[in-house]
Image 1 (cartoon, one colour):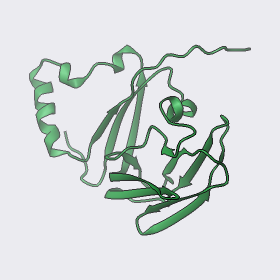
Image 2 (image 1 turned 180 degrees about the vertical axis):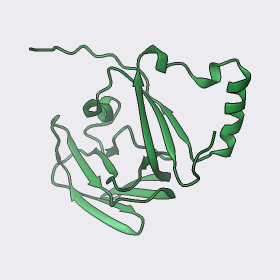
Image 3 (image 1 turned 90 degrees about the vertical axis):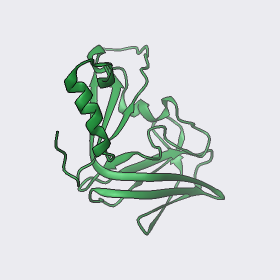
Image 4 (image 1 turned 180 degrees about the horizontal axis):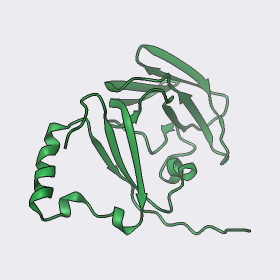
Length: 172
């Protein structure tokens, strides 16, 4: 298996019921200054030409939030999002593949820090029960070789999203 040293990947598993609009506040903390749940240290954000987005929550509207990334400071104000939560959002300048970077987000005297952030290609995988099977559950020579080889690619980051079920009323 060969990967370009300048491309970074994240392999994500999402349940079929996960919807991007809902993803960040399923376990996020609306009403508290926080990052949306999808952001954490050791993550990968999409490389250029896309503007990576960092978003989160706060308790009051019209409060200034600042973000520092790659020697640049971004500032913005909190506002209500489409769900009625007080939130904030930053679109970062397109960033080439690489890292690691540190991203800090501040509101008043509270600072949130994301360490060891890479930029690269982000792969999102979605499916049903076939997506639940983890490679480390395979019992074959080939899977053992693949697992042993992962030590050579520390830039590959994996995250698994816990399944959530929702009852949604659909109207036609």
